[in-house]
Image (cartoon, rainbow over all chains, first blue to last red; front, side, top):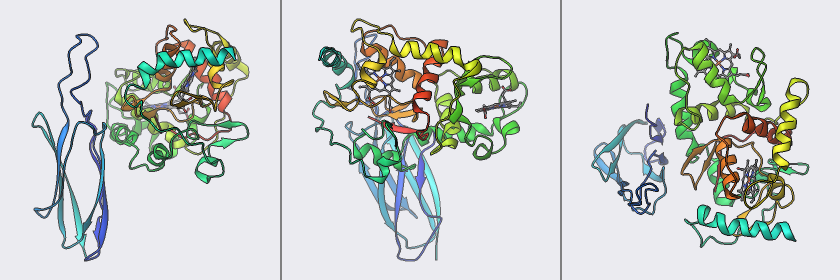
Length: 108
Length: 276
């Protein structure tokens, strides 16, 4: 059982309201500069290099991430409530693997 | 002061191990002891590692969302109700809602197991439940599952004062733990007490020594970049003075945990804490 990303969004919001979104995702964020103690060679870099968030298919937040970011990165930002629908969170790893999560929101 | 010099020597060694990542850290600011956030973790002469934490680290611990330990806790919450093993049972089958059944329980651990007549930690008890009652494999001490479950159980005692019993059948374990605490060991010939009793509050390199309290474990340590157990910390403190560490869960470390929890009696449980 893997550790799931944790995401905080309101289930409902008022039209025009600006709300905070909090996210934290479980990832080693391997920098590529750490040495394997046994072999003495560098452990290959493997980080989440991009985070993208869409709100009813419209891009509302994107971040390019670098190896300096700590393991289990925490990212927080604000979105303005416009319409009911889905907020989709997507993280992309160097390996190409993708983590996605969806949260529903009702706007009144 | 002889011991202080040895300490500084210890840290020239430890520096290579611990501080490789951030040698340019700013001078730690002295904590404002009247700050209500800090006050919660000071009881009489005792205080927890939270007090010597940088304010930024405290902010992370204070927000259950930002605290990365909750990635493990959330995983444990799903494991809690998932049947595992030949008996077809989950933790929930016997213990129901952990917020009710585990409330306050970890504040008195380690304790003597009624039937086994031996001193056990929360982690030992969880594995007894898994092996004997669920008929499944024990979890490894430092596995994500065990750390998360230990944190889930222990956080049901958050803000409650530690209250371990060191009399009766626990007495011989307590004596053993105390002996360990005062025993000089390793190439640097230091005991726990030299750092955490005689020198707490003193700065050695960029680290400020605390009283080495056990109340926040498992802890999310930035250096480890993950959750880690109290016994892992013991291993680290043993290795820093170039002493042979014991394995997690051994009788030596279990007795030491009892002694540390007794030192902490009255301080609030703060699992899962965040540390540098």
